[in-house]
Length: 217
Image (cartoon, rainbow, N blue to C red; front, side):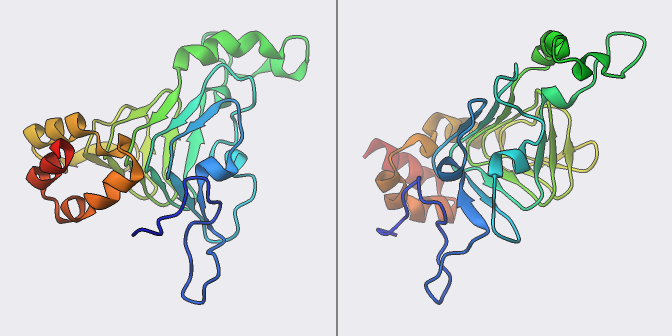
């Protein structure tokens, strides 16, 4: 584990023959978008080489849009995941949803306030987004949550919850409430990477007491 790659490594997974896996990327290394904020070690894994990752993950989010996409540290994003951010939405406050004003450059910004009201889309640290999940505008997914394959997340998901289906619903909690509170206090994902790697046996074993001792040491 001493050779853990830098957070700015483009292709952090090495195959047995020594070549880099072209479909797995650390997002900080490949996304340069003013409306997307990415934490260290968050990764996206696709079935083939990844080009223009920002537009693949958030195809409706344009530079200067009124909303942001925030992806936390150690987020795990599977093939086909899409973030349907606020600028994808049609105007819904009138009698028609047809976006008349986008066809005139002079008026296409008139929907910005309505988009902004939907808010940012936020993926917390250590969240796992499964194959082809969809995350809708303004949603916040709490730390450590798991989103199932092809789920459509239209409302907030609490930390360490497992959400499945369309619309996504919480089907269980990964840990009891007191353990979730302890994990959120520890916030191990914010530690320096060397400290995380030193505590990895406790993290992998699910030993919360040992992780707390590592935090205090």
